[in-house]
Length: 276
Image (cartoon, rainbow, N blue to C red):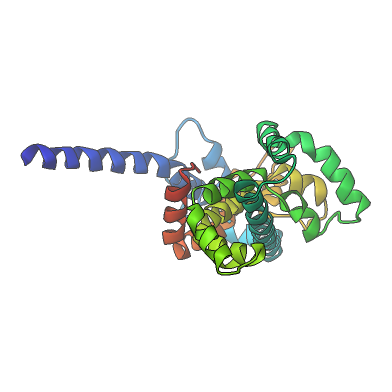
C-alpha cells in the first residue's frame, strides 16, 4: 500500500516537473514582452524580471502598429476552411480506400503514402503556379489551397473505417441501403473521434504554417499571424520585447480554442495516438 502511494507521489512529481520545464519558454516570452529592449538583450547583468517596471505599453504599441484584428480573421478563416476541406475530402477518400474495392486501389493508395514521405516544400512551386493561374494570390482561397486534400487525413480515416465491423454495412445493405446511405448514416457517424483528431491536427498545422502564407500573401491585409510575426524580424536589429508581445497576442486564439474544446483535444489525441 505504501509502495503504491510512493509510486504515485514520484510519478506526479516527475509530471509536475516536466510540465514546469515545458512552461518555462512561455513564461520567458511573457517576461521579455514586459521588459525594455536593453533589458531583453542584456547579458551582464542578466535580467530575469524587468528592473525598470512592467512595460505593458509594449502590447499597446504592437496592437497599434500591426492590424491584429485582420491577422486574427485571416488565420481563423484559413484554419476553418482547411478543417472543412480536410474532413470532407478525407472522409470520402478514406471510406473508398478502407471499405470499397475498385481497380487500381492499391496503386492510388501507394501514391498517397509516397506523398506523406516527401517533404511538403517540394510541392510549393507547383502549388504556387496553380494558385497564380487561378488568380488566387493574396486571397483566403489561396491560403486554403494546399489544405483542400490531405494525405495524412486520408490515411487516418482509412484506418478508422477498416477498424469498423463489416456486419454493420452488411446489415444496412440487407435493409436496402445504397452505398451513399451506408456511408452517410452508418459509417460516417462512427468515425467522429477520428474526424476530431483530423480537425485538431489540421488546425495546428495551419496555425503553424509559415512558408506558404509568406509566399502566397505578400499583402499585409491578407497574411496570417505566423507570417506577420516573421516580418517583424529586422535585418540589422530587432525589438525583442515588441516581438514577444506580438507572439503573446498571436497565441491567444489557440489558447481560447483549447480551453473551449479541451475535452475534444484530449479525446482526439488519445484516439489517434498522434503527437503534437
